[in-house]
Image 1 (tube, rainbow, N blue to C red):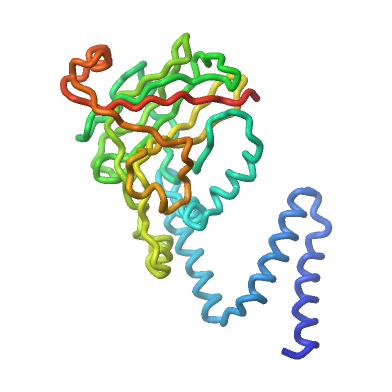
Image 2 (image 1 turned 180 degrees about the vertical axis):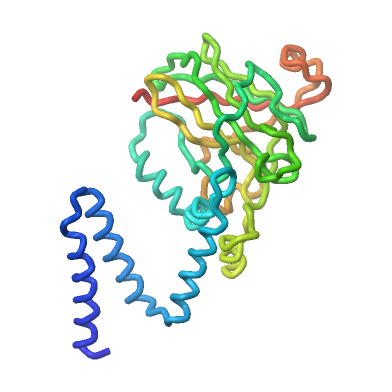
Length: 290
């Protein structure tokens, strides 16, 4: 490459960066100018052909077409599988506070799911019965009363209700509240590992790069309580085979739990109405004060 061509390329970057100089919002100006610098640096590094660049544009176009307002957000899936979601999570939770670790939100959350009673069963499809219970506490150990735990997981076929229209509305989803001692209890089924959707551009990307699409078994939580920061996290089955190769890089050791076998006549089985053997997982969440 001639010196003149290189200088022209660098001058183009400077020109585009300067075009945002009058952006009134300082943070937006910083974001846009940094984005231009990094994108131009990437292009100069890899020197894509025009055909390759058009393939990238079509990939992003197809990603947008796979998104909807209800249950499918392919751009979140793309962010997850590139590790960007977890990097953003890490940057926003850099300082140890004693609160429960966060992880990715995921693309299949649905607002407005049913309010459920303490210990209510949220599973309307087959699976191994399970009780997930524990407490929600402030980082100083104080019980958090009336915290809302918005919970969701896949069925045994590896799909979420809403994503899988054959499942009943609200299956394996619900909003639970803590009692006066900060306790919560959820009757459900043991979660299973499952592949993220591969019928769109993210799936094509994973296939082309030799990566598997599997996530380890987990239960999603979004926990809200007055005077506390919202917690978005998972609980992972500590025996899952994909813990060390999660397709979205979301596993943290502190979020692993054991699903222990219990007989129907176990004290918890009698208390929560299990008719046969079940699994028990116990976990205490800690919330940061806002």
